[in-house]
Length: 340
Ligand SMILES: NC(=O)c1ccc[n+]([C@@H]2O[C@H](COP(=O)([O-])OP(=O)(O)OC[C@H]3O[C@@H](n4cnc5c(N)ncnc54)[C@H](OP(=O)(O)O)[C@@H]3O)[C@@H](O)[C@H]2O)c1
Picture 1 (cartoon, rainbow, N blue to C red):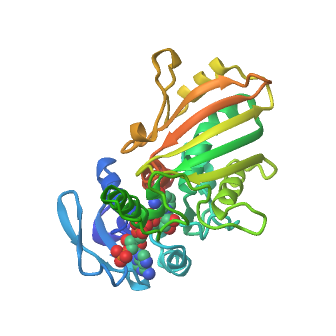
Picture 2: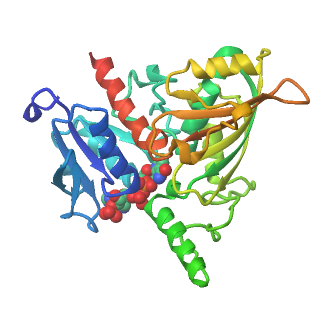
Picture 3: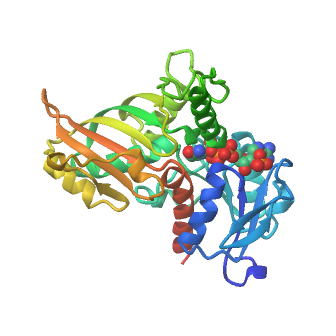
């Protein structure tokens, strides 16, 4: 650790003024992450303003290479282009860059980590560690207990993703469009490819030539990398829904070995970071509203396929917390533990 901070790490947060960055500061405090000194960073738009950490105001600096001198951990929660330029600069200066963008996720030199699932991938990192996509994290957390119990043969998933997955602009768009509709005005469409208020959009990010979206293929390839299962059969549709916080996924799983709904429920309930919320008799199921502001991944609607051996699950996770900031902080905690 840098000498200036005593034994506690110096932490920089790139994108500290954004949706994920703000939650990340809260989570560092809530989890009592040992912060020796904090450097919130952003673009020229916000440099000179302040953010609050543990009740104290910190001036926002400009995200540039020199800002990483003497820093131990740099959380990147800004843009992919910025992570591409600056994560190597942070690593060059001896910091570990923990990146929330998609830039480094599929780089074979960079571990892609969900600490409950593949912490061992962190060993031998070269200064950059990637956090999976917010949708992927909840999805793999629900699949891993089932994978361990019975193996995975095929997975079919439809996601219902909150507007905050597109950051502050996404949240603002839902709010502005809802207000416009209430006034009787035509909503302005900017952040998403169609109106999101009172609507569902079957496209997150952009379409590729093969008809899948860039978000959908992230889910496929990131899942394969995290599970170290390059052939895993996952097929998916990602949609955007008018929910502020909390991504949902309806998941159909075929396992390699038979697994009853009861055994799946038990495996899920025993897995760290997963909570089973599933009591059909009392109409108890997980919703994005329930999980917003929480770190756990909730799973319910666990039931056998009526036509065969597969299982259905409904999974929700807070995309800004476990889907982003919490997972990033857990990576830093794991690195500290591994260093002993
Ligand atoms: N939202 C989610 O659910 C989620 C989940 C997982 C991963 N992510 C990823 O996390 C990152 C941040 O997402 P977000 O949702 O928090 O976005 P956001 O709300 O739009 O915030 C973006 C942040 O990045 C900063 N920034 C933008 N351009 C910059 C530049 N050129 N130099 C320095 N700082 C710059 C902004 O600072 P200013 O105030 O200066 O503009 C702001 O702090 C993205 O890579 C995103 O893909 C998001």
